[in-house]
Each structure stands twice: as C-alpha cells, then as structure tokens.
Length: 220
Image 1: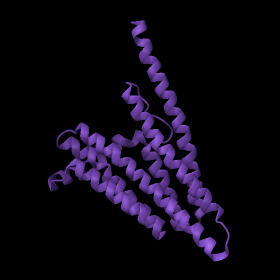
Image 2: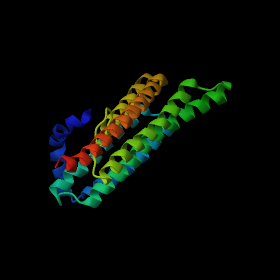
Image 3: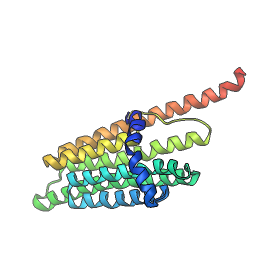
C-alpha cells in the first residue's frame, strides 16, 4: 500500500542522500549501518521494554536504511551486488524488529509466571502472532525472488515490507505510550493476517505472470 508513496518519499530524502555522498559514504555502507543499527536497537527494545523510544529510533534507522538506493543513484548508479546485499540485510532487519517484539512478550509472560504462577494470555498470543509474522515476511520475499528467477513477477500484495514495518512501529509506539500490551498483540495479529493474504496474492500474481509468458509464444 505504501509503495505508492515511494517516489514522493525519495524526493524528500534526496538532499540527505547528497549529504551522505559528500561525507564519502557508499550505498553499501549505508545498507550495512542501517541493518546493524536496526538489529541492535530492535533486540535492545525487546529486552528493555522501552517500546515508544525503540519505535522512534527504529523509524529513524528505517529512514536511514532507505537512503542506500538514493546514494547508489548519485554515485555508481547501483550494482547487482548492492541490490543483493540490500535485499539480504533487509531480511535480517525485519527479523530483528520482530525478534524484539517476541523478546518483549516473552519477558512479560515470564514476569507474570514469576509473580503469580499464571500465563499472560495476551503475551502468548502476541508472541505466537509475531513468530508467524516472521514466517510470512520471509515467504513473501522468497515468492518474489523465486518468481523473478523463472522470469515472472510477484511484487504486489496488501502488505509489502514498508507496510509491515509501519504496522509494527506504530503498534510498538502506541503500546509504549499506553502501556497496554493488547495494542501490540492486536498489531501482531493484524500483521500475521495481512502477511497471509499477501502470500496468496503473490502466489496468484506469480501464477498469472508465468501463464502469460507461456501463452505469449503460442499467440505469436
């Protein structure tokens, strides 16, 4: 959904990208710094429970990480390895953010068990939904990569990477402000549902693209 805003967003961050080029930063360096920073902050957020501030810092890191494409265009125009590195480390960052959520729920459930011997139902549901959301995130990316390997396309879906990150960060921020874990649990459930829908949408898109490519020679 948010992919439609990408051209507008790119115009906004281009001045920042030019500043990075003047500083001597390469696109690959921006990619690595963004992924490492996101991983550290994502896990630290889950451990500390500082969800609002974690969401704020992660938002800044996501914006920083999105600068690599603009930096590439301003320098070498982008390379195949750069695109490969960016896609690979994006998966690491996605995993780290959701891992932070899982750690947060795990620690909340453990605290309740130690306090009165009861399980925290909200934490368990949220943790399960987050684990499932990791699966849908990786499968969504795999479908696109696998489709492209056979000359097909599968880029669409109701929840692309930018949508997923926005949903997670908004849920974390609201939870951090309200101190009500039900917000983050509901966010993870929505993310899991949208991820499932996206998987089926991409499978359908890939199938249609493959069938169209097979029909093209016959019509010719």
